[in-house]
Each structure stands twice: as C-alpha cells, then as structure tokens.
Length: 482
Ligand SMILES: *[C@@H]1O[C@H](CO)[C@@H](O)[C@H](O)[C@H]1NC(C)=O
Image (cartoon, rainbow, N blue to C red):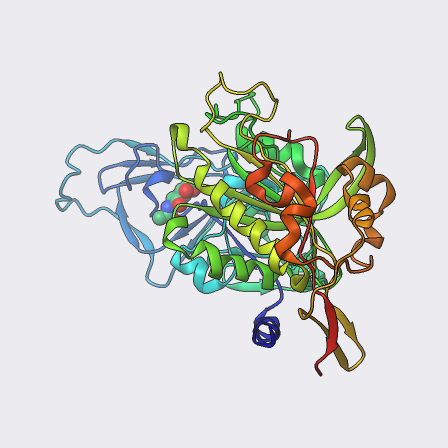
C-alpha cells in the first residue's frame, strides 16, 4: 500500500500541465500537387492559372521554369530562399511536351471549425512523429488552452467565422512566429499576409495560460457545436455513418453516435486528469490485447435533466470514450473489455485518484436484434460509488490505508442502494466525496450487495438510462504516514 502511495506521488510529480498542440493540416503551397486541379505540379509548358478574384497567399519552396502564369489580383507569393519563377527557355522538360492549362484550387472552403482539418498531439515531438490523440469532435478543433500551429514554410487560408466571434487560445504560431499576447497578434493581424491567411468574422484572443485546474478544463467549444458538426458533416446535410451496434452511444461534444464504451466519472478536487490518463495509457491501453482501442478523456459539461425531461443545467464530469477497430458483430467488444477493466480498477483504486463514481455505457455489435426484451441491447449501465480518499492538508498528507475489517450495520448499506435519480436529487456535486467512509470487507461484498457486486453481474439487467450503483470496497482505517 505504501508502495502504491509513493508511485502515486511520483506520478503526480511527473504529471505535466495538460498541454495540447493543434496543427492546421491544409496548406496553399505551390509545391503541393493537391492544390492543383490536375493533381500534379505545373511543368514548363503549362499555362499556370490563378483565378483573378482569388485571394491567396502561396508559399514557393523552389524555383520553377514556366511558360506563362496568370496571377490573382489580390494575393502574394512567399518565396523561400532560392525559390523563384523563371521564363521557360525552351529546353526539354520530360513528360511535359504538350503543356496544358493548370489551375490553382482556391482555398476558401477550409474552415477553422472543421475538426477534420486539425491534428492534435500532447507534445511537439508527437505532432512531428504523427502520434495524434483521439478526441471528441469539439475538441479536435483548438480549445481555449491549446497551442495552435500553422507549420513554418507553409501558406494557408482559413475561414475563422465564429458564432461566438471570439476564438480563445493559449498561443498561435504562424510561419515560425509564436504569438502569446493579444497585442502582438493584433498587430500581425493587420498585416497584408494575415489578411490573405485569415478571413471571416472571428477574432483571436491568446492568453498564454495553461488550464489552471489539474482535474482538467473543458474545451470551450460547446457554443460552436453546430458549426463544428456542420463543417464536419457538410452543410448539405450529410448524415452520420450507419453503425452496426445496438443502441449507439451519444457523447458530449461529439457530432455522431458511436459504438464502443463511455465512462463518466464524478471526481473530487484532488483528481488529476493527466495522471489518470497516464495510468490508463500505461496500465491498460499499452497491453497488446487493447492494441486496436483508442481512448479520449476530457472534462465536459454534461447536460442534466429532471426525470430525463426537464433540463437542469449541466455538471462537469470526466468523459472517457473508448472505441475499437473490431467490425461487424465484434464492433465495440474490445472497448467493452477495457471499460470493464477500468471499472474494476476504479472499484479498487478509484479513491486514491479522487474518483467518486464511474458510470459506464456500452454499445457493441454483439447482440443480435432478436435478443432480449430490454431496451439495453448492448448497453451496460453501472455505477461504482467510490467513497473518499485524498485528504491533503497543510504540510501533511493523510493517507487512507487498508488494515482491519469493520462491518457496518446492514441497514446502513441498504440505505446506499439508491437509484441514480434518487442519488442525484439528494447529493449535489459539491458534497460528493465528503461523505463518511463506509467500511466493508471485500470478501463479503457479493453477499451484502446481491447480484450487483460486479460489472459482469450488471450485464443485461439494466438499461442505459437507469444507473445502478454498487459500493466500492473501502479503506478501513486512516493512518498518517508523513
Ligand atoms: C496538400 O494540401 C492538402 C490540402 O490543402 C493537404 O490536405 C495536404 O496535407 C497537403 N500535403 C502536403 C504534403 O503538404
């Protein structure tokens, strides 16, 4: 137990502030074949056309010999050292005997709020190596504590229309220059290059601030949800892809429903999202059996309602999303296994991470449409109430430590067996985690709680709308170690 404590302390020290880098993907570089309507670069005999009304900034990496080029009225070429255009001297250009018209494709259509146009990574090295993170759609677009990168040596054009008008960021890097203050960025935005790079009604605000809350910060793009999904799915009403699983899951911040699993965590102020994310990555996701599983974890504001009808604001929760690469009837089954592993881990160690409770929902392709008369389909809903841990006091750390076993009167335990609705009604978010610790010997858990002592037992007996709780084996006594 002490070993675990020091491991946790160590991980705590390692946990860097949550940093996410978002890199814009499209570019308007001259040397990018996909920017030309012939899907190749212009060759010497070609007639190179820019539409006269095109507003564009084009980065040119090398030198080109051309026969003829029509330029836009409002545009610029940014020349790398040694780059340029030379008149074609008539010498032979292999593969370009018969020149043709070749037109630069305009870049008006690229929207800041299109999730498909960004790469996200938790370090610059990962960004470079292509180790991108998986997130819900709203968080694929830059969030307010993100560093935005437009790659050096690239030109681009992006529509920053924004329904909120203001785009909050930590920083923004353009052509190798990093802006961390509004003043410097505002000055840059007046330049002729900036006017070619950005169009639309949005304004940037850069703070140079990291998320100040170690339990995480929500992305801040909820107000742009419609725009984000319209950009992703196409304004013309393109539909979400058809899914093979039963009862697909709705996620906070995502445009389409998914197959897989989602876990929603209630947490105490001691919860550290980076540390917990690392735990899942290192202890579970890195296992070979989970090779095809992807995880997203973030703080989101989950809409609440009374009896599922009347909206009642929203509460912050940690949303974990698990999807896998299985297909057909196996779709989501690997994500389901991982979700079960994570729930077991929460039952055992959740308290030490500041997790109050976890609710899991699963949608897989495993259940045939004929099976079962419950609405559950492939859905498991279960909640583990983990009670208490982490008391951090001035200069002193209290650590809960498992020792003897103490039984509570069974009447007390029965009182904990409430349905989710009841629990929501009595306990506001602020008093979670400050209940008295409940003592219960793990060996007698199944007996005390009947069928609901494990995730397995919950399968098939609950619908995704009715939460079922089971009590966490708790720490039995407190001991001060420091
Ligand atoms: C070429 O441009 C397209 C569209 O802007 C972009 O998606 C792609 O990543 C670019 N390719 C390279 C190699 O820069």
